Length: 321
Length: 288
Image 1: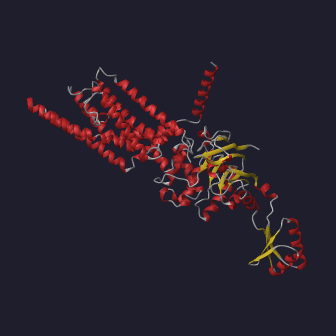
Image 2: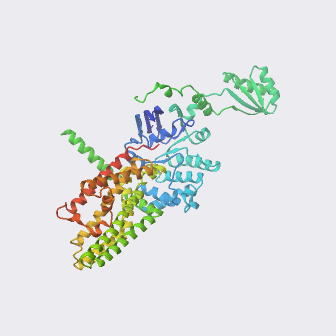
Image 3: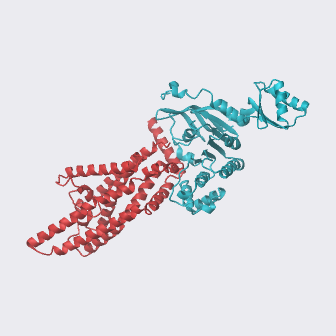
């Protein structure tokens, strides 16, 4: 599988503080890759390293075979980038802003107008063509930033928190657009977010980050294959009777608004077989039966709460490395 | 020898790469954008007013002076003193012209950093040198536009006097008039390049303005000391570098001084040096 982004033991210190620590990451071509982590995990810094906005303190970053810090110009011929809270020229009209940005990609004036109008149409910004950028709402500005990143059909799209500052409708719109782009144009897309359901909805590969480290990376399906939750939520037609039966069979159960929370106690096989058997014998109807947490959420919570966070700050890693 | 070959091959490969990806195409785009944005700002119109009104006033004062100087003896001497005093007041005021050029140029990069729009430029396939050169050309075009009324006035004034065979014209030919106008623009190009360099060095426009002004002041002092004049504590050097200087004193074209061509080459060299410095600073600037 061709790798489009490779980080090899990359570290980045800002003001002597470790932001990214010995990171190794490979992103295959065609992937819809999610960089997931809580705020302050180092996601934006990682994307800034990938786009040559920052120089790595140590290690090697390669994007589409190029060094982003040294070969920023050839790289940006192939990639589109949407920064977190993108800034635009506040005094220009939206169309003029996009035309200027397109011309910086080397397009002629006529091509720049055509491409800008196309991008605005794709993002539903056509009615705002003559609006002044500084007067757009947060969501409109975000969509304009998105349109700017899409101009020229880059083969790699890097999006830092693309749904931030969007209203729910805008979020759905952008998420659909991202999945459509990946499907129709086979673009490689890297998305950072701290919102797990969004990453889960949009991406097929994921890297979970915390405190500047990649805790786990891989195909979403592989990551959740062997992940079981400790608690399961059961919805039934006779909740109180079902609770009694489960307690009699040695399960730990709590009842909350007609929903049963059943603990697996580490034996998931027993939970599944006995709960189904009890329902069958007592003629209880099971309306739904699912883990309390989403599988990826379980992975995320387990990894992020693991005690790896303070390593870097406790002096294990020095800037000389 | 092999190291030399490696270096030559590396340079040639870089040149080939630059040409293949269309180096330079963004310079005109950035210059155009800098120019169009610049001429929409209030400070441009204030500067235009200043740069147009003062040359015309000086023009009028000088011509009035020439008429007054038709007297003889003490009357002529007094008339000359009065005219000279009046002209000096106007020239001293032209220091503001330098300040305006600095103010127009100082936020070229620092302003982009302050508004976080530099990251937009750097997320496009644009070389740092293209950004700096584009900004420089755009700013120089603004300054040329600001001074064009005065340039035209001077050109036609000198041309008419030259054609009339006036002895007050120090310039020998029309080519020299044009060359002096280029020289003046280059001198102001130095101020623009310096402001641009400080603008790249600092993230704040105010620091960039203050640094440029400080350097201009120091240069004026050095210039005053070197030329052994008593007025080095004034802004004479700055005044001399401004547009109206060529109105009544084109002494640098004197045979004892380096040729006009040497001046132009020297000024171009200083501008190139400042721009290379600005590009190097920008190239190594991280955006966080």
